[in-house]
Length: 115
Image 1: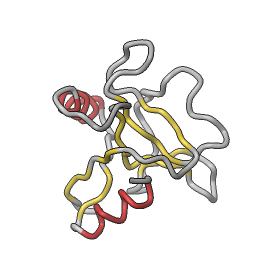
Image 2: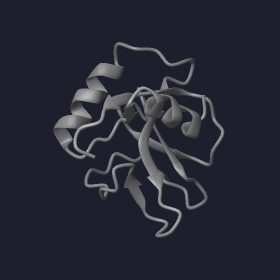
Image 3: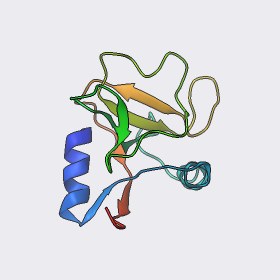
Image 4: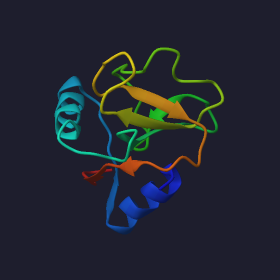
């Protein structure tokens, strides 16, 4: 499922794609995905995208990215959505990658809390 489709599924269930504003939240999600599988790439859509107005990467709740877990050479200027990898090619667990659009991956929803 693509990033926009994953976000729509989350919204339909009164949730949103996962947001990780703290190191503790990132560590929790990284630990959780180590026991799960999302196809051969083991990547998940997360609630991080490039704002079309400001062109800055922000969480879907409008908050600024305060933790940097990007893979080497990411994010790319032409990309608009973020993925989280179980393991990147350099062995880093829980790293973020950027994509242009319609790439099918798993996704991680979370409950809405005061958005």
